[in-house]
Image 1: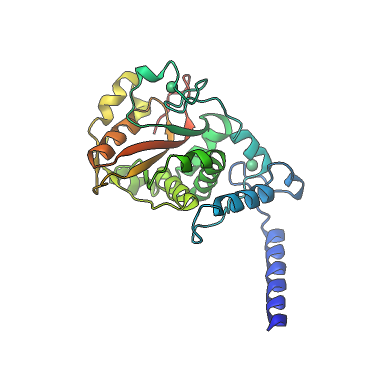
Image 2: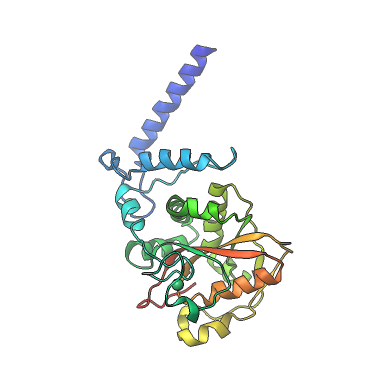
Length: 277
Ligand SMILES: [Zn+2]
Ligand SMILES: [Zn+2]
């Protein structure tokens, strides 16, 4: 039996190497082959084993391993952002708020941001919105948890919820990036995931509107699909600009009985950028 197990393990290693030769693994962000030379600081193999062991220290056994093979260059580039306000997400803030916080009463407690919306992150976010972009969304979610996992765990949230897309838009697009991101984040954190909100009326795209008109566009557009009896919610979206969409979702979650809402977004569009999800 021992021999049989050894043979099986060896065969599986050979098969894996053969597949690697035929289809070399590619970074889901930059699409470059993940070369052996890239396995230095921030390399996929080192990063993945580190994250796997780190995540497994709190996640239950059914939570999946880190499977995204983000290359070292993308890992370093997309994790370099720092010094954001933890309450409103603006660059240059801190843990206790910043000068922009009083002007923007959002309704959530704290926010975690992977990076600024631009460059390769913008391209990755746009690819994550396509039906074939689930691997990109998974990679971005993994990077977010890698960067902010300790903070997310410290918030003590009990459920992960995506910002919903209207059913018609979802059926046209065939996917929802926020859904895939939140599902992945929930798995990595070992938390339940629910599509607890619905967008009951189709709204105009936020990036088609002047910033001042965006809160009215999404006001009352979301409703809870289930009662959240005192739960702490982690609300997830791909991009945030003014926070109008996230604020409207927060209100709907609190109306549905949530005790608190915290937010995690992959990208924060800083002042010169006006795209929003
Ligand atoms: Zn890459
Ligand atoms: Zn702030």
